[in-house]
Length: 418
Ligand code: AMP
Ligand code: MG
Image 1: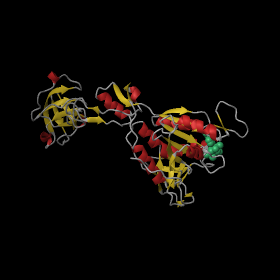
Image 2 (image 1 turned 135 degrees about the vertical axis):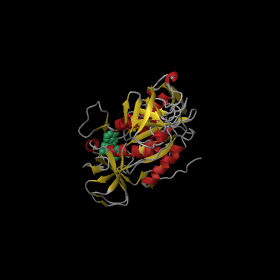
Image 3 (image 1 turned 45 degrees about the vertical axis):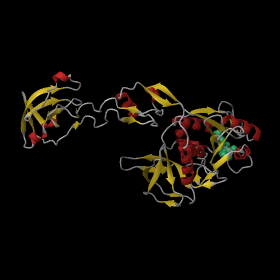
Image 4 (image 1 turned 90 degrees about the horizontal axis):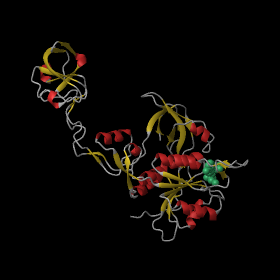
């Protein structure tokens, strides 16, 4: 299916995000490679991991205590004959074959509960005297026991392809005996900073020149979502050289450009891409920062197929970071083979009032802090979307809906944490 190009179009935040998600959903997964379990951390799983046995493989005691039959503690206190001790990892021959009514076995956390027992009384609620134990607290059937296979049945899927492998997933793979995993290869993401005033970070900037910081924030963001950044040389605001570098960038799986997408006389990115025959899905979003953000697709050569997706991100450093997070990220995740996921927000109470003009959904650098049920958020004072110093002090983005002009302190607002 092809998606009809719309140009030039300024979309609401929701529509722009939806457009990106629709395109991302159509991307096909990249090639795969086998890597050691620890090297798979942060990568995207390419084949399902199955349970090689029931989990747990036996009814597992979750407490140190006594395994017994719950009906025997309906009257308290109750006294039991202790017929043995079961350690975690106990050899099968030493485990009582059955716990009869009125009997109990001393049992440790992680040890198998023998047949006949349907509950474990915690050691804290017992007193041992020679081979008799007195129980002072009732237990319900099943209490302190995880039944065999309750977490996963042998042969069932523990981890689906498309899962990004964080610590719990790595632990699950380890518990299924996987010392290596099949993961997707990292997509290559070209990064092209544009602007006559932009210089490399190793050269000494002239009085009106600005060091290229966007290529670095983008590279970090690309790495974090599983891409391999490719930093291209800085493009001047001059169409021939700009086109050459865009063509190079289109050889990657995705091209991220920064700068040159606003309304200025030297903002040439859209113009050059139009001449190259690009299709544009949007050329702006009603957001702040990042309103001039561009999303499209272009092939580097005539007859080059459907081409490569690109984003033209506004050059102001915070606009670049925010628009990456809102729009480029889902595309890179899809290129990395990850199953699509919606943006997830947390909520926090605003510390100080916010006054803005309505009409734009705002994603403003803020500080989120607080206790369990007392999360608060406060905007970081800043000089606008070029203020990297203020943004480096923030730990989240506070979201102001496009319809709001005033949010009083104490109101719950949505917060985006990366
Ligand atoms: P532009 O989007 O090209 O109009 O640029 C907007 C602002 O962002 C200008 O102040 C630029 O100097 C600045 N800027 C653009 N590209 C970069 C970059 N790669 N690194 C740091 N600042 C940039
Ligand atoms: Mg510029």
